[in-house]
Length: 212
Image 1: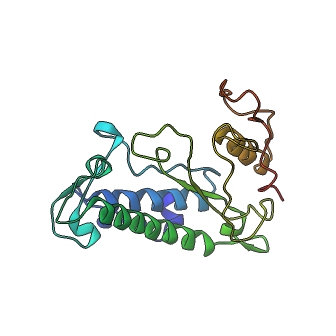
Image 2: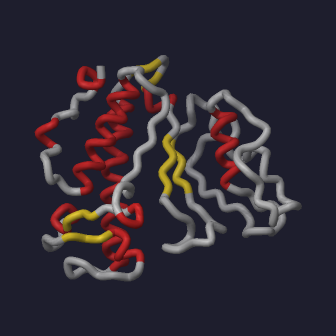
């Protein structure tokens, strides 16, 4: 079923010894094919799991730089690889991630569904594996939200930023994930465990700024 639904699911594109981004493209291809085949409604893709420090290595050639291994954990500590600064490498890696993500979205957008396409009824969350820094306190955690789940999410190209930790109006990841449950038609009173340092903060309600 996956093979029949995946126009780009070609094993020759992902040979043994392929780089980290080839593996990522393979994951995206399998994920899209599984959704199109109706085998699942939810997929999770991780680009940084499986080795020491939950990191992977990519080759500089995959990013258009000089050949050689790039340790993703190392650049988080300011390390330079392949003649590039850590900042330049971070930018190149994010660009490469979004290229793979865009190809995934385009594949979903090519599948008719209802009055539109599968993409119209899909919600994609793109985020990092940690918060505001390499060794974060997780007081901030950016999310890129793509799609509106068939109109259940408030539309528009918007940037939302909630007040800082412990400030009035502050919200947590628990609020965001509970919002996703409401959007998916499986509402809950709360998600996860509360932060006991935030006794005055609503950590349970979904985010009204996102619900249509």
